[in-house]
Length: 266
Image (cartoon, rainbow, N blue to C red):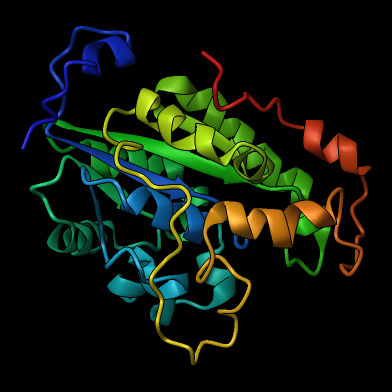
């Protein structure tokens, strides 16, 4: 199926024929909002996720589906080393589970943020396929992290992806901006990649019925993004005092470390 969208050449700045598939890797460190945004984008009719979109947490991840999470320890999974990953097997797993009748294929496994180059090369090698990245970033002040001194290093990774791939291939979204202006995000995504934001209802809550999961209440799994942000995030800004905040840089320095573009920016 080809992207039959008249806005494609204009939105992408070229008159090129649209690809058959655009693979979007949603990149972000743990607790940066990837599950919420994965569910949000999964609502779009043009998008195929690897698992049903209402699956949250690690079970939605391609690495869990492929078995990499069982084969490697946590430390190994977060190694900045592409050599240990069975790329051919991983690609087969992803393509076997995506609905290829849809033009946009979505995947999100947190450690993939360290492997953007290989993802771009391996999945972009297929004819009529384009690879893009949506990158989530979030201040450490409201992340459930035990050591926030890693934030500058994480921001360096995000900055490198943005600089290497540019605006065509990398959409940088700060979690704080998602909460501040949630209704601007779907049209901004759709402008960046036609079909990625169309049909998204930002005010909808996930239809999760499994009450056995201990963290369902007052979390993204049970609330719409605006409701969650207005009750569980924005009231705690500029930082969550319950966290052991040990970052070596002041809060505002951390936020300005990366030159965030507003989601409405040209």
